[in-house]
Structures are given as structure tokens and as C-alpha cells.
Length: 99
Length: 184
Image (cartoon, rainbow over all chains, first blue to last red):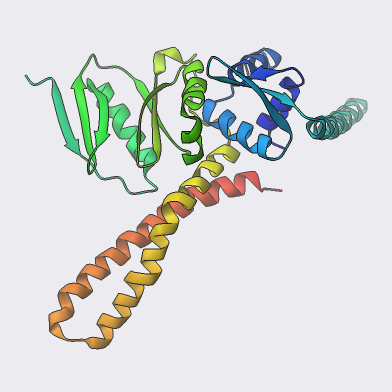
């Protein structure tokens, strides 16, 4: 999964439209990740096709999406993977300090 | 002094980066892009010189939901200009970006996806012409060998080189993005 895909799923645990995903991701990463509209549009269409998110309704030309059950499962798997990566990293770091 | 100008510029299918740079350069020199139409006719009007980033997207699927597509770009500060042979034109002033150079794509996966869409929509027809017209013609002409056909041979030879250079200039960035995503 791309970083963009991960943040989309993370944000869409609540209903949201494209630009609010951009804003939320910016907040979560202290402004380090600013999703671009071309990337976001492509990812949203692809993830909708794959059944990870679904279109809820439209408000003022903005499409509102929400995560699906399949999306939640995929997100949880990805979170576990990242947790494992993080734990391994911390373990390796601690060992370095011991030396 | 005229306030408008029109330039003829030909950009081949894989050269949208060059086109973006061309439009940005024009704006820096005080010529704001108005529209492109006809056969590669670029229309400009005089403006204050300004650094404005131009970007092209190729996404034929988006045209069925054009207003939502444009709205998302507008929310992110990108002004939609027009559609031309399947490409959507956007621009955003560099002064509106917070220090970093923004693009409409922020990762290599989506840059590669854009190239795949261009490949399906624009490159496949060129490949068909290349393999079903240009190459058979070159083989046929070389077998006939009459001097009358030399002109045709040269014509197809030039087309062969042009097409080949287009394929190569498409393949190089494609391969670069592909490798950056599929490394390790």
C-alpha cells in the first residue's frame, strides 16, 4: 500500500471528501505530507473500484467517501505491519545503545 | 505593442513535461497562457511576469465527473484551464505554495499511473501505426528498390526515427518510476 493509500483509509474511518483528507493528513503529519490532487483523485477512484472505500453522497460538487468493511480489514493489517516495523526499529536502536 | 500572441509548438505524446516548462517560461516572461487549440496553436496574453507552475493530467475517466474532478483541484489551489486532446491543464502560482515546489502528483506510484493512462490512450495507437504501417512500408519499399520510391523511403525512414525516439522518451521515465516503486 502506498503512503497516500494508507492516509486515505485512516482518514475515511469517518466520512470525508477529498480536500478534507488533504487537510487531515497535513495535520496528522505536522505539515510534512501534503497530498496532491492528481494523486488523490487517482487513488480514490482506484480504491473505490477495489471496494476499499465507498461513495456516500455529494455535497457542493465534492464527493464524500467512507471506508468499507474490506477497507477496515486492509487498514488493520497495514497497521499491524507498521507496528511490527516500528517495534523492530526500536529494538535495533536499543541494542545499539547497549553496545 | 500587441497584447496577445500565438505560437505554434509541437509536443509529442510523451513530452508533457516539456510543455509544462514551456508554459511556465512564457508566464515568467510576461505571457499568460490563454488556451491551446487547433493544431498546436498556443495563445497567450500579456501579463505581469510571474512564476506560475503549469501541470498536465491525463485522465479520460474523470471527464464523466468533470465538475467533481475540477473542484478537488480547485480546493488544492489549482486553477483548471481547459482540456486538450485528453489532457487537463492546471496552474498554480509559485507564491501560493509554501516554499516547496508543488506538483499535482506527490508520489511515483501516481506518476506511473498517469503514464499508464497515457500509454493506453495515446501510445497504443502510435504503436499500431508503427508496427502495422511504418515497418511494413520500409520493408516493402526496400524490396522494390526503384529510384522513384526513394522519396517514400526517406519519408518512412524519418517517421521510423521520430516514432522510435517517442517510444524511447516515454520508456525512460516509465522505467524510472517503475523501478522506484518495485525496488527491493
